[in-house]
Structure formats: C-alpha cells, structure tokens
Amino acid sequence: MKCASGASLRTAETVTPPRCATSAFGGHALADSPTTPLTSEACDPNAPDFAADHPTPANPTTVTLCGAYELEHVHPLLRDLPDTVLVSGPELHAAVTLLAGELEHPRLGSDALVPSLLDTLLLYLLRTWFTGPTHTTSGWAAALNDPVTATALHHIHRDPAHPWTVAKLAATAGLSRAPFAKRFTTLVGQPPLTYLTWWRMTTAARLLKHTDAPLATIAKEVGYTSEFAFAAAFKRAYGTAPGRYRRLRSEA
Image 1 (tube, rainbow, N blue to C red):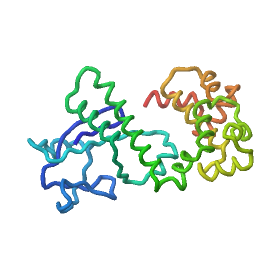
Image 2 (tube, rainbow, N blue to C red; image 1 turned 90 degrees about the vertical axis):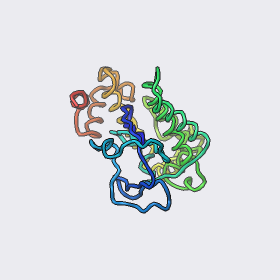
Image 3 (cartoon, rainbow, N blue to C red; image 1 turned 180 degrees about the horizontal axis):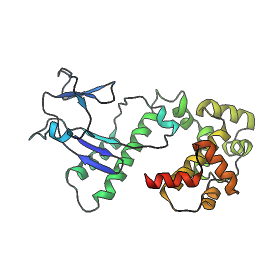
C-alpha cells in the first residue's frame, strides 16, 4: 500500500492473500478477494506502527494506492461526494500507472511529479464522477453541468476582484437577473453574492497563508478597495483579523 498525504509522502506495501481490513473511517472495507472474510482490524496508513504491522510481502497479489489531502477550507463541491466513489476510465488508469511508477522507483524530479500526479488523479476522479449520467440532477454536479451557472462560477473564480453584481453575473451567463439568481441559488445552495463573498474570503485566506503579500494587496486582489472593509469581512468569516490569522498559520 502506498500512502500519500498532500505533498508529503509515506510509502509502504502490503496485502498478502488472504488479507482484509476495515477502513479507519468506517463504512467500507478492503480485501484481496471477494471471498476473504472481513476482520475488525482497522487499516490506517498514518498509524505509527503501520509499516511494522503490515510487512511488505515478496510477491503481493494486490497493491493498493491511496492518497489523502489535508484541507483547511473545503469547497462545497467536495461535500457532495459520497464516502465511497467507484470510478474507472483510461485517464484514471494512466494517471495511476504514472503515479505508481514514481512511487515505486523515485528518480530525478519525483518530488515535483508526485504532487502534480496526485492533483491530476484527483481531477480525473472528480471529472468522472461529476459528469456521470446519474450525478447531474442536483447539487454541485448539476451546477457544473448547467451552462448558465457554470459560466457565472467560472467568472467568479477567475476574477474575484471584479465588482460583480447579480445583474452583471446574469449578463455573463446570458440570462435575466431574477431567473439567474433563482437558478444559481437552487443549484449552488447559496445566492450569487453570498457565494462570491465566500470565494473571496477563501482566496484571501489562501493568500494570507501561502504568500507574504501586504494586506492591502490581498484586499485588492479579492475585490476590496478598502483594507478596513476587507479586514471586517474577513473577521466576520473567520472570527479573527487577517493579520492575526496569518501569524497563527505561520506559527503553526
């Protein structure tokens, strides 16, 4: 089993027949064969003694590739995903093959390739799930497959600093104001300007955590001409001032 957590990677191989384990998160189990009886042993690759308790077999019949992201700000899109998703396809197979190769035989540039391949694999998985014929009737799957809503989301994500109004977003999507607002709210679960504010604050939090840009610059990048107005909006969203939020994340 090869396990990745964000860009930090821990590796180990296991699974000898007959072998099975319940997930540490519950709800499903892994086994090397449909006929293998399930056990109550939890499989947590991040456990301190995982490698010692699961020694690498000489000739494993099953190799499981697993990855994990540590997310501080979870997009509503991800909350629509079920606990277990079964997807397949040539793109997923190709991405898994490339990732497995880099994990099995690290070479020059592997440190840069592995995080990129993990992101690629995640995107292929999400694309396969959200464009599937049975997942496009409600929630974010429907929002992303609806041309009107998807167009508005694209503009918000690409240019959060723009002085968007409901009327302007409706115009970019080719619909009048009232029908657009109702359609967006139904599919996304939030009114257009509420989602815009959430995206601006999420973007600001990322910039505060990962850049040294001055607060005035970040405020401008997320659509606030006044640093004071930005600080007030950020405190409403996160319960603390932007500067203190940056300091706490830096200390952590």
